[in-house]
Image 1: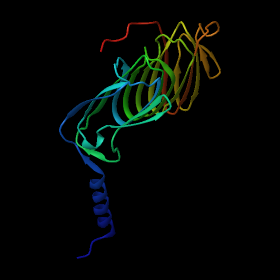
Image 2 (image 1 turned 120 degrees about the vertical axis):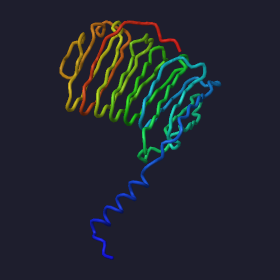
Image 3 (image 1 turned 60 degrees about the horizontal axis):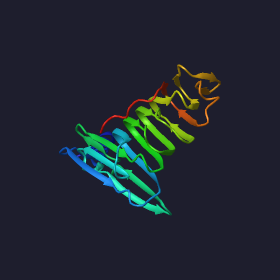
Image 4 (image 1 turned 180 degrees about the horizontal axis):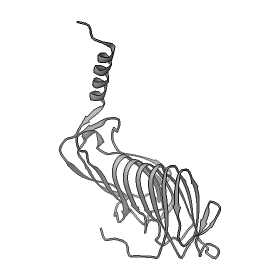
Amino acid sequence: MFISKALWGTVILSLLWLNACVRVGEFQEETRSFPMEDHSAAAVFLKMGTGELRVQAGARELLEGIFSFNVEEWRPEFEHTIQGDTVLLTVRQGDVSGIPMGKSKNRWDIYLNEKLPLDLKVDFGAGESRLDLRGLNLRSLEIDMGIGDLTVDLSGEHDQDLHVLIDGGVGSATVYLPEDIGVKVYVDKGIGSVDARGFTKRGDVYTNDAYEDSEITLSVDIDTGIGSIDLKLKGHLPLPAR
């Protein structure tokens, strides 16, 4: 029997698609943590491929997390190394190469310790991320966002200078910043818009009223592709209860 090249192509593509798919299974919820021990500082790297990410202060340990998912391959993995008195902790989503066959769910609720000096890096592929970083003892922050919606709250108290780097893709980003601490935001944007009410704009640089006289400066570099950026000034508010 003769099979056309077009039909063979369809068969091959179908087999490749099936091999690329991952099964959606039963809903699972895991609670995991990483201990404080005697470290004097920490560098935490959160790498999530797709889903919902929530990060805030409130952990007794270095990190406490609730992970909810229904694709077994997405089970989070913990890795750590020690450099001197600093712990380097990576939490990454499991294999993200497949396509879920059904309605998938993946959500991380991450709580970080607010006492330990912290360098935080977030690499998020697609979905929705809400990072309420008020109360954390941040030394640096780097966010790499692919496709989706990002909200970052940095409006809490700061007792040292902080540099923030946000590399955004397709979607929207809302960044809350303190109104009583000096803030300088540089936006290198592609196709999109910037809403920065309450800021003074000079070229691609936005500053708040406190910038000229503040002893502490929060410096934010935003490199965005297609999407919108909303910069919002905010006073100190109580942290949410866990």
